Image 1: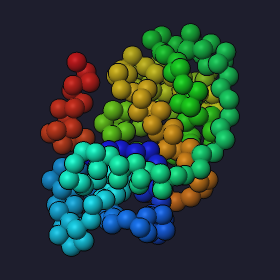
Image 2 (image 1 turned 90 degrees about the horizontal axis):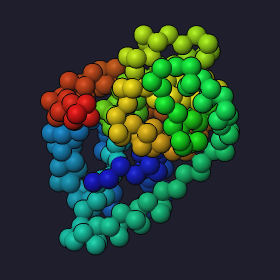
Image 3 (image 1 turned 120 degrees about the horizontal axis):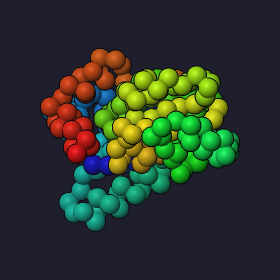
Image 4 (image 1 turned 30 degrees about the vertical axis):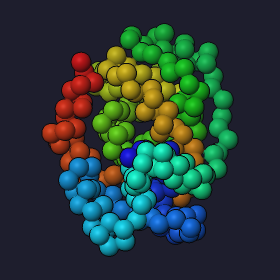
Length: 231
């Protein structure tokens, strides 16, 4: 089971099934609708396996499951699937490093991510639009929180609101991390930026609902993972 960027990005489109049908016509696959990870997801996969006996299960808003007799065969099939699902990345604007570092120097306990791609979440208009919505897949919610602190003017940052979040998006400028960040935050934001850069402009996107986000946040296993980050 993996979380390939290309696969996650492709499943976010309401017409994902047609896309996979075109790209994976030589493969034995099933598309699983989004449900919370765990028992409910395993039931959907089990039902699909009983009906179609696929060796590829594409999990909407989540990732990929590959079935094979050996690890080597699974890896080979996995790589073949990924090679078929290639989404074009948009060209993104460059970062004004001098400006974002200056802003960070004026905000106590804030940190500037080193990856220019992470800053596209605030600089690229479409990525910023997507960043303002609910998370699109479970792991982002768990490691990054439901929403960042979003501001449209770097001179109007409220420190009390900032300290409640793990990261800050300054529209048109860049991203700052707060003291609440965990060791996975930058990696997860980089993954989010990679996914967003592959989503066509103004396309419809299936994000997680408020109810689905709440359900994930209350799960015992996810609470355990969240608490591990705090340690």
